[in-house]
Image (cartoon, rainbow, N blue to C red):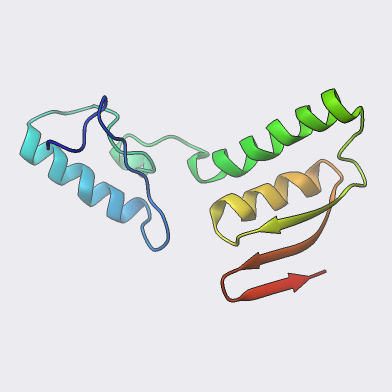
Length: 118
């Protein structure tokens, strides 16, 4: 447990690593460190102390920050704006969802295998 700790590194899931795998890692961390209840891994399922809306948080937050930057600096709105998204995982999926909820039009979404144009 030298490399994983609340004040050292807080790993998160990525491609192919979801709540189940993070839960396993959290269980191993608790076993090896004898520490319980620490926030040392992000992306845990609710059963392991994770939070509701965790999968959506980064995509929603990205759009929230972009929305405020566009409104503050460009004096424009996302409503009706055409947006291109790079990626197709949780961040991209939930960014697209929030953009559409705010009235933007998602025109492309892509990943390492190609691009979809709408």
